[in-house]
Image (tube, rainbow, N blue to C red; front, side, top):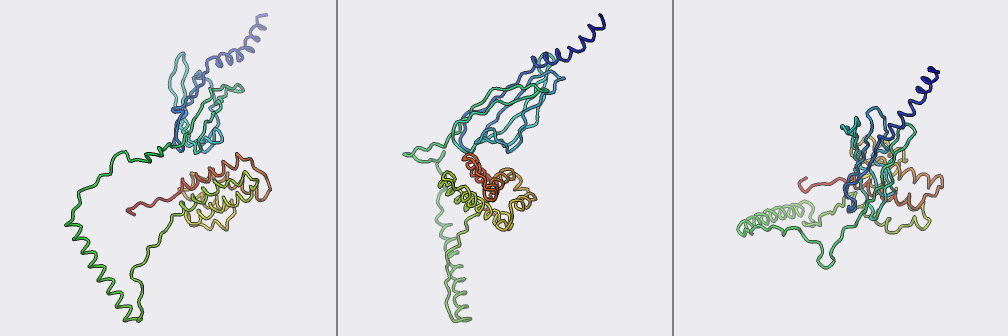
Length: 311
């Protein structure tokens, strides 16, 4: 009889310990700001209070994943552990998120797991707003522009020197050409206006976004236009023959470029969906098409090369 009680106790002990651990586990999710402007960022803070011996798994997300169709993860912090009460520990982890489309988004509860038991946090709401501009007043500077006093003496001296140099150079060129070839050429020419590749790409993407041909059943034409814009941009920006490459070759070529690594995940989504539409004749959802155009803007904006006035 005594042996039977011992066996029964040993059999029920794991169940009792599991139920006790469950009762001591608390999960929670908070957001720093429920109101942001398009492109701004905010933090989601996850935490779990658990017994030291428990092994609670955090939600399985990674950078560039989306919490909803329009809310995406930019970075994830490493878990931070500290002491709690009653021989328990507190583990925290932060998600830096953003959105490039205005609207109100409900972020579903985050799931934590202990063996085969799930623990869910509360859901969160994020409102993404457009930048509001007073149409009557327009956009104003925070402070007036500082204008230093005008130095006429310095201005006239520099202007005279510049004019003298220009006259001498222009005259020298003019007479040299007439003496050498006996024909005049224009001395003053219009400077060539060079538009950066990212500006050209963004203008074309904006036009595609405004036309919304994916809503008219023209998915193949939509992805052809979208990928052509990106291929032209990659050709100029990264000096690769993107127009002649397959999707896989483009990804391989960009993997070796440090500046392009941040956009590989979203680029793969665009190219994979495009290949499925064009070659497998698959019909994506409107939501998938909208994600593709948002990701295309992200790819260009995150890799654009800004040239300073000094350089």
